[in-house]
Length: 465
Image (tube, rainbow, N blue to C red; front, top):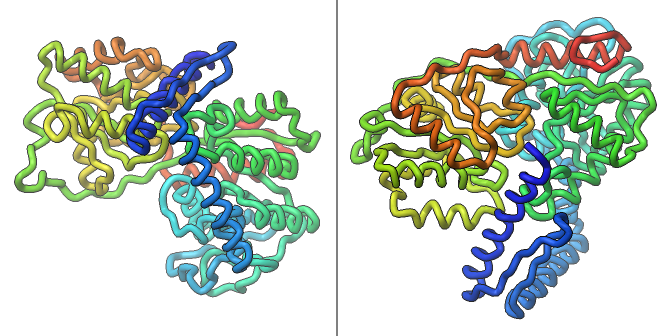
């Protein structure tokens, strides 16, 4: 997909969002979005809109001032990771191998601890934390002021000191300044520092992300890239993005910086049979397409809905089931979904679903529809492959990297082409995808092996020379 195509999609989403917000907040349609010189976005709003923005900014400044004076500035300045509650750490009760002799793999889990989250980046961090503990490869650690302690409480010394040859893997999205202190501590003691990069979407496509996130993300990424010895990306596509970004932005990285990639994993335990709740339509009685992911611009759910509108206009009696929480910059899409004539009938939106329910959706779906314009990996592809759901996905490089030719592709943002493939799926059952996947144990072992090859200056097939 070309940058111009994504830019047009971004501008269309921003225009729709601005108009929706202006109508909702001010009761008047005073927003206009234009492009100039093919690159510049110009937004014109009403006087009421400008007044609202002025008051919003003053409120933020008041909040920042009050929290800073109260010694609580960590609530908004990105340093919350320096204030973890160590007594809240989980106690390790599982098996643990003896610590390996030689350099340890120390996984930074500071942000995961302080946030308490178990999804996305934090899920990966927790899996790595469990792996290094069970395998004896090393230990997950938390930065706590000037102390570095273990992520899990257990039958081992609580405090950790870096030693020469250790490998510090920054598995969380780094948050400064806590992370910078840990990096400097590690490097001063002779440890090798590696950054795990999930994607560069906030930098490459800022209009598709949450407001104000790009600046913080870019500042953090630029600062940390200049201080690490290696980078591991979660896909070859992301690794290439990192290489290109370092060159284009002229980040002053280490002259011998090594960049590699390793895929994520997924585990699927036995699921109980999910039954449709009483009083709700049974999803098995009519064909339906499944969409899984946050309601946000880069997922391009508007394209899936456009395709369904085409099918419904042609008389197709099928449903679209979306499973994902509301994200950001998509009030316009939420309004379109909730205001659609088929909402609650042939258009279903579940903002959350349990494991058993989601597994049932995958098993019963005519196909998973995955219209994203940019991704770092693509976990729904792995889930669809496991549960046997055919896949119709946008033709973007990372999906080709993961699934090869075992799924059906359409040109990204082309709702007519998507509708054609969906019509074919309704006419005859498509084959489920069949491509190589990893469980979490093998995925984490892959990260560990790659990290050690980086630190020891050895070759590896997923590591640049």
